[in-house]
Length: 203
Image (cartoon, rainbow, N blue to C red; front, side, top):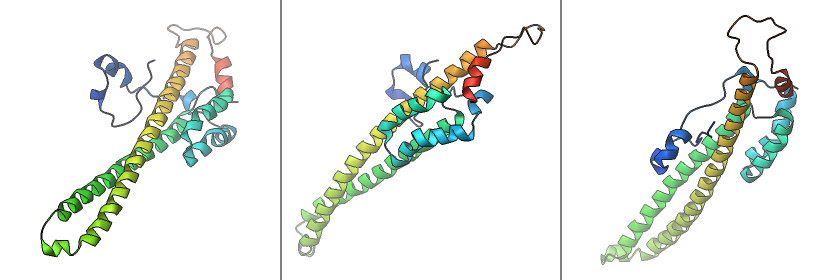
C-alpha cells in the first residue's frame, strides 16, 4: 500500500494532484493481529522507543523502532497511537507558538508606530516604549525559532508514523494472503494457516 500522509490538518492543496489521491487515503490497521500485546512487548517498546518520545529526541526514534521490531516485526495499534499522541501534542505546540509569534509581531508594530508619533505625551514615555520594543523583538525571534523547530519535529514524526502505519498494514495484508478465507468447505488440516507469521508476533 502507499504510505498514508499522517499529519492531521495538512492542506491537500500543497500536494500534487497525482500524489494526493494516493497519500491521503485513510488506511489504518484494524485486525486482531495488529492489536495483540503483552507485558514483554510493552516493556520493549517503552525501553527502546517510549523514552525517546517522552524526552523529545525524535531523531533517535527510527533506530529505536528498528530495534523493537527485530522482535515484534511491526508496531501494534497501541504503539502507533502513542506516536500519534506525541504528534498531536507537537502540532498543538506549533499552533500555540504561532499565536505567541503573532502577538509579539503586533506589539512590535504598535510600538514602532507609537515611537513615530510627535505627540508630547507619547514622547515622554519613549524609554518604556523602547524597552517594550526590545523585549517584543526578542520574543518574536525566539518564537520564530521555536515554530521552525516544532514544525520540523512534526514533519519528522509524521513521516515516521506514516512509515510504521504502512509497515503494520503490510504485515496485516501478508497474513491475510497467507491465510485467506476459504470459499468452499475444507478440512481443518487442509486449511492454510499463517502460524509462522503469527507466532513471531505473540512471542
